[in-house]
Image 1 (cartoon, rainbow, N blue to C red):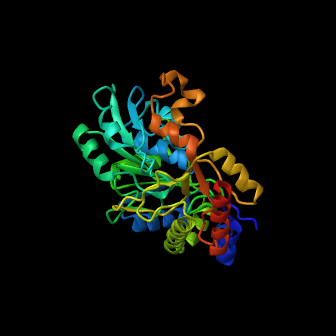
Image 2 (image 1 turned 45 degrees about the horizontal axis):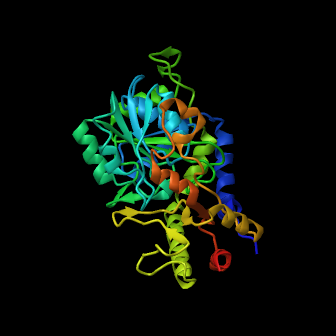
Image 3 (image 1 turned 90 degrees about the vertical axis):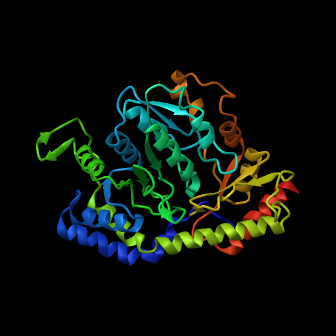
Length: 380
């Protein structure tokens, strides 16, 4: 048996006819950049997330930059974020002219640890914002971050690239901070047919500035108030996303069900304890916080001899991936920040242990059985 980490073909087979019709609609209109498809998509996202405004853009990376700049981050500022995330979480801060400051992660969830952030507030010069990442589809502790941001009068930007449809205490990711960035890269739960992103916000002023920034800093054609960027969402991607968004709630429900199946199968295999105490197991599991509605963009385990396990799974036909093998504070391009090995031990340990297993809505129980049996065989 071969079990891929992700199989986009299965999803596409369900919606192919609708997507073809949507793309034909755009071609017939000949309105390819922004236009009515993008405007309607933005309205539908706002209604889904529960926000005042949505601004479509060219990628999730651009979405982070737009959110940071529109929320007031300027050259010379500092922004606290996590070292355990995709590169864009930190590179967008640098692109805004600011300095990324890394705080360690919570060992239970691998999300940014509010206590670590609080400990850096007084020692961080020119601190302007906090940027928590909703890693793997689970919201960071937004109760704590909202409190810290309010106390420090800081902007709170959600990196929700992996979390479209996730929630915290009944509110949607993307509606909790000053602004939130989403990615629709083809591997995401809500995926485009290429690069695409958006920013959500409750603040009409932030939204207005982002619309200008995504269009070369222009509110009126050929008149430029500031230096912006070409980050306009195209109609083709918006049309694809509008089709898929109708199915996303069900797809996310199926992902949660698949995660529950994995939990049960690992328990049955003796690799997971029903009481959650996995300290003696070679495989450990991340915690889903009770306040969070997890959408399992990834199903991630922490594994002893991780690299050997990944190789073993690959030979058995099971897809697996490491998100992420090197924390951001240890990346060569951030050497100028002065971090050293051991400075952020939880993130560094996670990078040695994490392994993402196959996770997508169409994954079968037979395939999941094979994945868990193969993991158990490795440790037998």
